[in-house]
Every structure is written in structure tokens, then in C-alpha cells.
Length: 352
Image 1 (tube, rainbow, N blue to C red):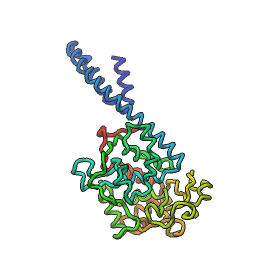
Image 2 (cartoon, rainbow, N blue to C red):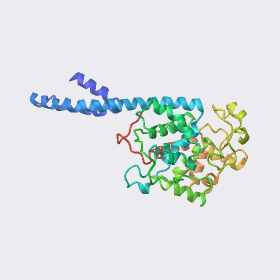
Image 3 (tube, rainbow, N blue to C red):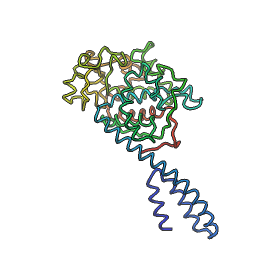
Image 4 (cartoon, helix red, strand yellow):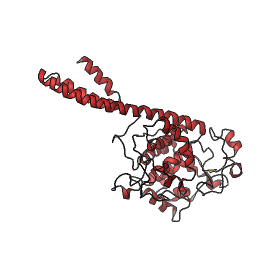
């Protein structure tokens, strides 16, 4: 009995072993019953335990691979300064979600299902340039085959945010990969447009209205992720700045990157950023530097409306004044975004 209690306590310390601890609690209670009952219960318990051990070994292997995947992603990000493009990739995978299709069989509603890796999505206009991000993550998938693409993509985004100085996000893993891009997903996949045809505030609310539990708070908080990265002419087409020195601003030129002012850089010049320190995750996006310095910084209509719209402004002002408040709301909003449309196995997900 003493040994069983010790084993029970040890098992309870591990997330994947909680069910084992529950089983041993039941067996301990049976030790007070007549011998015949105990023997019968023990025989049944042994059968159940053997099945659970098999499941436990599989789940433990997944946890090990998830942790290894994160280690490899950290190496990729640090070696390539690719924080922005990995965040962009995850957003454009999960952002295809549309709740009007959620009554249909999964994965019809889209979302964080790894479908951005399929040709229909990765070659579409909104995802121009994101094939580079998939190639950066290919070695991670090869090294960790038990980890789904959907998990790797979302893990890379959350890890990039944290490595850039942002908040640690309470991520859940165990996503199942879609076998193909859903028929219901049609370019441009309901993703935000820097220069929408309709009024910017209405456009943003329309986009986020497709998502479960998203409102003005989440719109403003997630927009703050533009503190990272740059826009390129050959990708979004929303700026005239192309990749390379000829398309660089004073914040994206080779000299600025090499000086380390924008953090560790991969040396690729060009494009136009929202902030001067575009590899640092902070609340500087909410200063809207592009309004004061449009030559060197971005402020799209979907950025500036956050400062003026009655529903957005309270959150915009809050985040501009407090980085801690921004980080708290961003982390919660990022988690919501990362789970849109996801099919988790086990259903409660896996935390590492």
C-alpha cells in the first residue's frame, strides 16, 4: 500500500499521468474490501492499466516531440531573425476560420488546421512570400513527425512573440492536421486588407466577426502584433518598398540592420516597417509612427482607424499607455486566434 501511494503521488505530478493516479486511488480503496473482490478488481484493473500504459507511452512521446519541436523553433528563429514571417504564417492559417461553416463536418470552417501548406492557400495572393516560412519549419517537421503542421505553425508564432520580448502565451497543442484545404476556403480567405474597399472599421469588424468570441478588444490587441515585421511590394503590394537596399527605409537598410538597432537581424534589407525596432515586440505600434514619418514607417487606414473609432479607441489608448495591459490582452487574444477551428487530440489538448 505504501509503495502504491508513493507511485500515485509521483504520477500525479505529470499531466499525462493524472489518469494513472486516479486508477491507483481506486485500487487503494479496494484494498480494504474482502480478498476475492480485491483479486477480481485487481485483474480488471491490470487490463485497464496495460491499455492506459500503452496510451501513456504514446502521449509521452508526443510531449517529448512537442518540447523538441519548440527547441528547434527557437534555434530557427535565432538563426534567421524570422519572428515576423512566422507570426504572419500562423495568422494566415488560423485566420481562414469562418464560424458560419462550423456546423459542417470538420475541417470545413477552416482555421488553425495546417491547411496553409496546401497549394490552394500558400500560392494565393494574401500568402505571397509565406512559402519561405514553411521551408524554415520543414526541418522541425522532419525531426518531430508526431507533431502536426498545425501545431508547429502555431508554436512557431507564439515562440517568436516570446523571443522578441513579448508575453508568454498559454498555448495548447495536439491539433490534428487537415488533409486538404477545405472547399469552403476561397481566396482571399476573409483575411484583413490594408486598403479595404469598405470603411476600415467596418472591414475589421467584418473580418473578426467570422471568429468565435472576437470583438473590438481582440481587433486592437492583435493589430498590435504589427510592432513586428515589414511590408513588401512583392508580397502584400501595400507599399512601394521592395526587398533589397533599393527598397529600404532608414529603419530597414543594411546599415541599420547590421548595427543591431532592430535586434538581431538576418541582414536582409528592404521593405517598410510599422515601427523602428521591428524585431522587438512591445507597444510601440500604438504610437502610429507612420503618421509622423510616412516616408519611413507604415500607418495604413486599418491602423489609423484604431485611434479614432469610438469602439477601438479605448483599447488603443489603454495599450499605448500600458505595455503590461497590451501584453495581457494580446496573450489572451493570440490564444483564441491560435485555436480557431482546431481539432485537438486528446480533446483537452496538450500543454508542455
